[in-house]
Structures are given as C-alpha cells and as structure tokens.
Length: 272
Image (tube, rainbow, N blue to C red; front, side, top):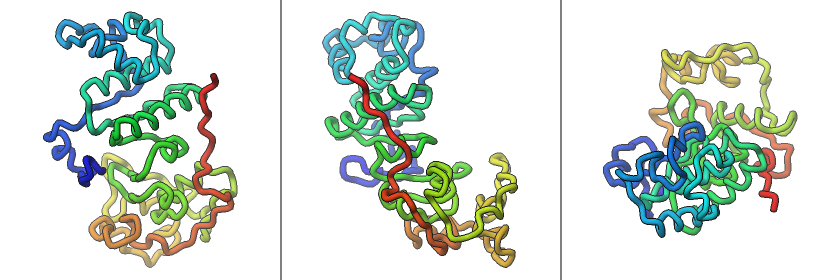
C-alpha cells in the first residue's frame, strides 16, 4: 500500500496503526447505532462533539443534505446509512481508509452511486484505501492494485489491469473463471480434475501450498508435483510475476475470450 509516496507493508498493520493513519469502515449492519446520523459515534455526541459546521461539511462531502444530520437510522435508506458511515470514517481525516464489504448489502443501483462517491473521494482527498470485497466487478472499479488472499494469505498481488488480464496463481484464475460468463476465461488444461475436491480446512491448513487440495495444476493433475505438498511457495514468491505463491505460476496460458479482461460485470451508474 502506498501512503504519502512510501510503500507500507500490507501485512504489517502495526506499522500503519502506530503512525495513526488508519480509519476503519464497517459493514452496513454495524455502521449506525442508536442516535442521530450527525453523531460521530451513535448516541455519543457528548463524548465526541463535532461542530455543526464540521458535521455539515462531512455530510456534504458524501453528497447528503445537511438536514439528514438529525435523522435516526431508521429514517435513512441503506445507501444513505453507508454514506453516513463513510462520513464518520472521514471525520478523523485519515490518510488510509479500510473499507470492508461496504457495498455487499446494497442494491446494485445503489452500489453504483456509493462506488462513484468512493472513487471521487479517492481523487479529491488523495486518499489511500484498502478495499475488501468478494465482488471482482467492484474491486476492479475502485482499485489500482489488487491482492488476492486464500486462507488468510496473499497468494498474488499486482497492478489491477495485469492481475485481471494475466493472472498467475491458479486460485486467481479460478476466481476470474467463476466471475466471467461461461467460456469467457479458458485455462489450457482440464479444469474438471478438481471439480469434486474438498477445500482445505481454514482452521487446519495443509502443509506446503494451501491451495494444492483444489489446484488444477497441482498434485491432483500431476502426481509427481510433490513439492506442492511439502514446500510453502510463499517463501520465494517475490521472484515470480505478481509475487505469486505458486511453484508453477504462469506455466499454463490463460485465454480470455472477452475483448477486455476488466469486463467482469457492470457497475450501474446512479439514476438521476
């Protein structure tokens, strides 16, 4: 992650927290507690006072009328609640914002409006954002760099365009294959080999490569590739394209039949 021109370790959260850089966004279910929308923390205006002018500034920043400040959560729509959550996160003037599944509970049309707002704020505030989502269409819309995680570990990271057009790790390839329409992504091997394979237990991950129990190019397809069982591929991942944590990363070509790899589904623009 790039913060003020410097690269901060994606894993070393102490490095960021110690610098007082982080502000967290939360899932929709927990963003607004009992109290008014203008409260910095639901129901705690006395402990965390904000001036009326500052509340109005924050609401305007997220495209909400200042009249919304005195409304209760039940009087706001889902998209408006998420905008309030974003305003609260920005109240601390953070340099890094962590947004965890902020659109997952919203209708598709409302998602588009919130994502457009997020992109505009990124540009206007020069804000770094760690955007967490299972929706690849959302990720490609707001991200410059994409990191793919499997069982709590980053298995591939790189510029968004490169990750979507030339994925190196089998798990990234499988994610893209699932996101694309049928036939949009083709890996030049028999993908049926792991169709019935059981995923690894996240509480007791297997040794070696954590994805080898389902991998289309690992021991399931090639019995002689015992290195996948025995050796953790993340130890020398920095030597591979996109720092892919796979012993055989990039050894099988990916064919994209869509003209643009970023076509992972539409992001609807807000309806005026």
